[in-house]
Amino acid sequence: MTAVTAPTSVPGVRARGFARRNPTLVLGIVLLVLIVLVALAAPWLAPAPGDAGTATHPFNVLTDPSSAHPFGTDLVGRDLLTRVMYGARISLRIVVEVLLIAGVVGIPLGLIAGYFRGRVDQVIMRITDVFLAFPALLLSLAIAFVLTPSVQNMTIAIAVTWWPWYTRLVRGEAASIATRPYIESCRVLGVSHARILARHILPNSITPVLVQMSMDAGGILLTAASISFLGLGAQDPTPEWGLIVSQGAQYFATQWWFVTFAGLAILFTAIAFNLIGDGIREMLDPRRVVSR
Amino acid sequence: MIRYAAERLGLGVLVVVGVVVLTFLIARVIPGDPAVTYAGPRASKAQLEHVRKQLGLERPVIVQLGDYLKGIATGDWGTSYRTKRPVLSDLRTALPASVELVTAGLILALLVGLPLGLISARFHGRLPDVLIRIASVIGVSMPVFWAALILQLVFAQKLGWLPAAGEYDPNLYYTSPLTSYIQMPTVDALITGNFAVLKSSISHLVLPAAVVALYPAGLLARMVRASVLDTLGETHIRMTRSLGFGDRAIYGRWALRPAMNPVIQVTALVFAYSLANTFLVEAVFDWPGLGSYAANSLQALDTPAIVGVTLIVAIVYVVLNLLVDIAQAAIDPRIRLR
Image 1 (tube, rainbow over the protein chains, first blue to last red):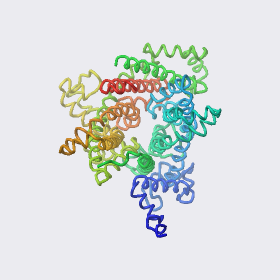
Image 2 (cartoon, rainbow over the protein chains, first blue to last red):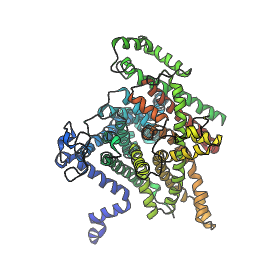
Image 3 (cartoon, chains in turn red, blue):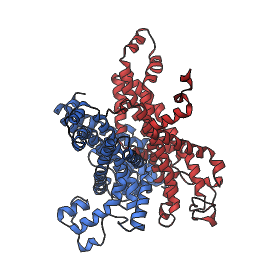
Image 4 (cartoon, one colour):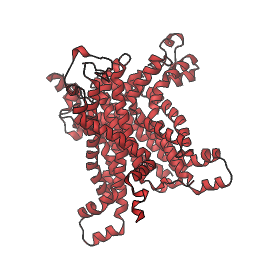
């Protein structure tokens, strides 16, 4: 009976133990939760919600940080704190959407390639080779360049460059699972290919993809900010962080706040994602225990 | 070995053809009317008609693709709208400056990343490890365009320690003119013994190279740490330890060497990644390379130039990958059998 009330089973203690074993993961989650909360509560937290849109204040242009405008104002007098808060909504949405699209396209293709092998496999893999021959930023930029610049088109452009990674990863897993005896017995029993793929191969090959996705989130965030910085993503008045930095770049020597806070927002969000990605990988990595 | 190399080469050629086809799809097929993309949104009807004829858009897509492939193969990469010069000759002048910058950045990244990774592994779980891991996460999370602006403001404009922009001091054009062989001032100055330019160009390189180095340094530190920790658990390390070898020999020689293979591979891959990242760095530092060329072309809606830059970087990437594969197979015979 004493075992039930032993200290190890008290939730708080257990959580502390988890935090001590996975410090980066917990730090990342805390950071990300804060950012998500700010994004969700932006309409209530932001000092001037109208400034996230088309509002302009000609008498308030480029003012220093003050109690009224803690992050200062931009070149048309909009409150930068408001814009940075609303920016979290845009950046987080881009990351989630890119991961969703890339997963929905990439994972089934990888399953098919790994399960059926043969010519289908060859064709799908050669196509991914071509996509993977471009640094992600470069290919997304080229695609964003021929589309009309907008957040939505930028999301599509990044997703188009991202799916092959997941196809590759899933294919490797699926190919090794497809040769296992229990899959063979499924086939002998007359289970359909679709059912085998959905019920047996997919659940057993999905973990590495989810880990990879958590590690990619930071990269997607930076890619999106970079595309917007170069003018091919979000357009004014969208309060996107990369766009804010590019708007502030020419005022940087004299109005430091314009660029600084939006850049810090990108940095901290990317750090949060990367800490989580690292933490998850390390938690699942069996080689983590080093014999010393 | 030769058979393996030939196989990889064949695959490489196939990928390059695929890359060219993909750029064709991006430039000619994704946009509803490619003539508009090429001529710009303000073009008149007559201009559009002219562009359509020039690009041969009235012919079937497959014929157009054939012509496009032939053009790329024979060195006709189109003419830039902005510079009015052949794209390929523009690239030939822009690429060396970027290669110089990225090479300097990667050397810096290796000099910083390798020791940090080793120290991190040596002090696994202790304070130096924690600090280095935090630093490397910051390195890979840094928006490079923002880091470029901040470093320029702090070290060039506020502190005045380093020059803010350019390849070397323009005053030296007259006092000690540089004979350019390969369009890389640092290397050209070294070859011709022009030490005034050499000194100036190195000081101009520091800031942009540091920005380029951020991501690779963080990545390398993390990788070296992980693979050294992996090797430390292996029996040959226990053996050396039990034989009484010190840390320096164990970490510097036996633990680091197996970790070098992935390091070489990542360095090669990150080279092309950094070439694309110069799009965000060069414009800030006014560095006359591929990145500035691309940024200006993006502004000018210069489609042939953008397609050219995309192609050249992808080709560099494929070639580097191929070289790494072959080099690794030459070093480690097990790879050939996979």
